[in-house]
Amino acid sequence: MASSDLMVGLEIGTSKICVVVGEGRPDGTIKILGVGQAPSRGVRKGEIVDFETAMKCVHEAVVDAETKSDVMIRSVYVGVAGSHIQSFNNRGCVMVPDDREEIDEQDIEDVKINAREVSIPAPNAFLHSIIQHYHVDGQDGVLNPVGMLGEKLEADFHVIHGVRTRIQNTIRCVKELPLEVEDVVFTALAAAQVVLTQQQKNLGALVIDIGGGTTDYILYVDGAVKQSGVLGVGGDHITNDISMGLRIPMTRAEKLKIEEGSVTLGNCLPGDTVLLKDDSGFAGKEIERETLNTIIHLRLRETFELLKRQLEEEPFINYIGEGIFITGGCSHLSGIDHLAEEIFELPARVAHAQTMSGLTSAFENPQFSAAIGLIKYAQAVQVDRRPRGRIGSLIGRIFHGMRS
Image 1: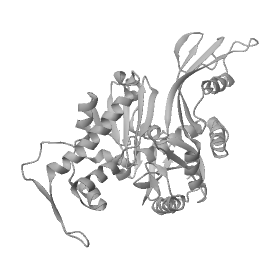
Image 2 (image 1 turned 180 degrees about the horizontal axis):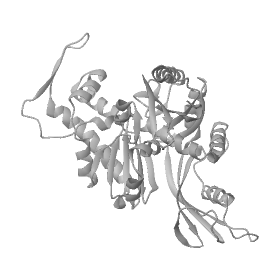
Image 3 (image 1 turned 90 degrees about the vertical axis):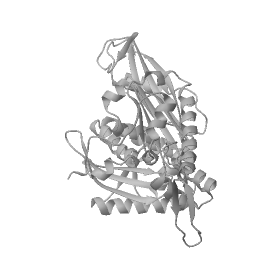
Image 4 (image 1 turned 60 degrees about the vertical axis):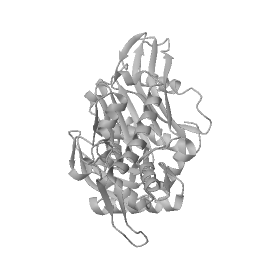
C-alpha cells in the first residue's frame, strides 16, 4: 500500500481522544483501517489545560490506532475546537494587470490574501479561508475563474480564526510525540465533509457537532460555508447537571445519562424509576426517570436556543432546505433530533459518516464523525497536491508566531 494513500485524523476531544487511520481509494471513497481511542484528561472545553497529561492521552490513542490498523503513524491531520474560534464572511478584490486579460492562479492567490486583509484580534491567527463564490467583472456565481477574461476579480470567503497560542498548544502536543502535523482543521468543517453530501450542501444544511465540552457548528447555503463557530457547552455539562441535581457522583451521572437518559418529556409512566445499585462509597439510589429526562431536556434546550440566537444574527438559517444534521458523542441521546426540530422549526436528524468502507462500527458511530472527516479533508487536499505547500507554511506561520 502506498504510504501517500494513508491518512490519519486526530481529534483531541474533551471526553476522549480519537485517532482514525484511513486509506484513500481511487474512486474517492475511504476505507477505515483502524480506530484508536483513549480517555481524555488534561482537556477542558476542547482545549488543552494540562500539557503533559494531554500528551500522554494522545500517545495512548495513537498507539491503540497503530495496533488496530497495523500501521506506523508518522503524520496526522488534527482537529481543533474551543470557544475561542470565530468566523466572518469577507470579500477580496484584485485588478488584473494591464499587460494581460486572462485570470491566472496568482490572481486567485492574491484575492484570497486580499480577503484576509482585515483586522482580527491581535492574539488570533487565521485557520481557514474557504471560498464561497467568485465574481468576474460583476458576473456572479463563477466557480473557477482561471482562464476567464476579465479586469476585476472578486471573491467571497468564509474566514475562520482562533487564538494562536491555543492552536499552537494543540500542534505542540502532537509534535512532541513526535508526529508531523499535516494540517489543523476546525472540527465542524471536518465533520461536515463526511456527514453531508454535496447535494445537501447545495440545498442548505446545518451541522451541529455536540461533543463532551463544546458544541461546534457549520452552516452551508448554495454549497458554500456561510456561518461557523463554537459554543462552550457540551455533554459534560449535562452530566454535571445530573450529578448536581440528583446528588450522585459524576461517573454515575455519565453512565445514567448514556444508558437511561432521554431528551423527551412526558413519555414516562408515573412512578417510573431507575435503580442505582450501591457501590463502594455510594449508598445506592432510586431516581425518577422523568426527573432525569427533565435535567437533560433543559440543558439541551438551553444549548439549542443559545445556538439559534447566534445563528439568527445572520439571515442564512432561513435558507437551509435540507435542515439540521446532529452528530458527535452527544447525538446518541434519545429524542435529541425532535427537540432540535421543535426549537429551530426545521427538519433535524442524527447523522454519521457516509461513503466509507472498512470498520463499519466506526463510521456508523456519530462520535467519530469529526475524526473521520479529517481523513476526508486530507483526501481532498491530496487530490490537489498544489495546496500542500501552502498548508505546510500555514502550520509554520501559526507555530512560529507570524501573522498568517
